[in-house]
Image (cartoon, rainbow, N blue to C red; front, side, top):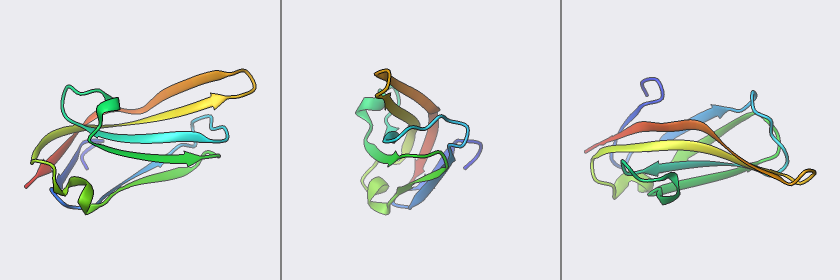
Length: 107
């Protein structure tokens, strides 16, 4: 990993650790990881991971070998978003934690 850019070999495992201490977390906050083709929206991610948390702290997303094994070598992008609903005032928030960043898969 160079900065936030990732370079892995196709079929390798990979872990992204995030420290969410600076974010306001409420019960049932959901953190999403998406790996997508270039020029594709987050919603169309090829690989999707989801973690539900209730307090700030460190979370990790683990890609298994099977997550990238069938992807063609090339340039992809990943992003991480947080979704929370404050039931007290019914505010639905989506916050991008890591904006679209290069994720290169080598053969």
